[in-house]
Image: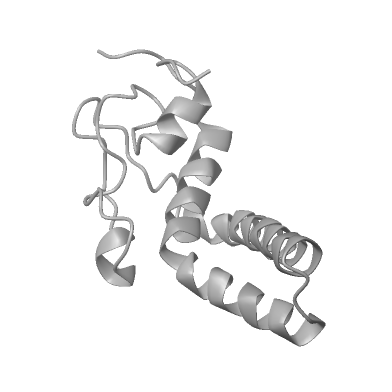
Length: 124
């Protein structure tokens, strides 16, 4: 499942979707909003240009929305269902979880978005 050649490998390991050798993001830091979202212009291994067209990653906002909804639902189920928190406490827990996960959701959404359009072709 996490072997080279799968999209999940590329997404979770911060790798180029085409060759899965070069890094997608400049830093492997998951936290730090500015540093964690900087991307290479192209792959350091196969030279694939990551910005396929102007404003390509605006579409990743839809993926971010989906990830945020998933985080919110999971947090609500845990807070309200398991820990029996009040509705207001559950909303506060959701807010904290979503804010804490911003750098991770941005990175994941960009990686998921580009992997939707680029397939693995192996290394050169």
